[in-house]
Image (cartoon, rainbow, N blue to C red):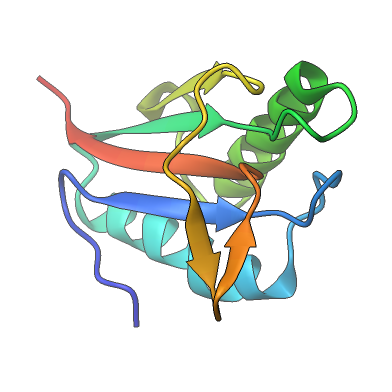
Length: 117
């Protein structure tokens, strides 16, 4: 199980060129965020959409990704006003990451859980 906590960061990965949530992300990452927020409603959730510069129309794609995650979290019970949504397109690439030794493109939504102060 993925741990939940204030000041935590989660990554919702997407296939290159896609804004469709995978079953893996739906089963493992988003439920942790939604369940954790129900237990600690005083936290704020920042959603940051990203796309790789090699993807078609990265600005639009990053926005679609972050709105997809936002919509799903609302369906899972997270209140709209608990989330702040930003979309960066390819403007703020994250550090290169790898999965099973294969580099991942900047194709994700970063979810940051922060104190609502």
